[in-house]
Image (cartoon, rainbow, N blue to C red; front, side, top):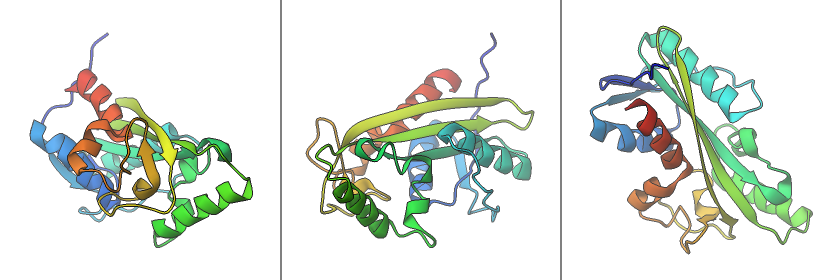
Length: 200
């Protein structure tokens, strides 16, 4: 089987999330890529109508690739909480509402845990990276980091649910952790390591 390689150059990050763009730039720019976001290019955000991280990642990457004619990378990621049956999952961003307010989303998760009287606070961040080329070729890579939720939130260095998530074996939340350390162990880093091994 011929392995498709992703060549350095312009790469469209199919996201309007500034935190994700920052992480993707940190991962790809040292390798010679010019990462431009869908927000930079004023691209519309497509409706995410799938019920899996993989499906929604492909929707975003395909739309950005069609609109720009350049290879596009998308990230669909979210938090799954064991005691909540995997919620919020693919609806993680929806729990933050519009405009996105993750302080409210974190409170919503905490209330839900309280409502089910959960003593199990285990959770995981999931990430699916999708790469789509203009000729229609597609690749998918999955990453996960497991941990547990804490309350109240701690730290202002991350984004999303980072201030309430402590990875297994760590004492700091992702919101407290040095960004370089977080980038090295996050769900996005796990997916990126697999992408790098296959495509770069």
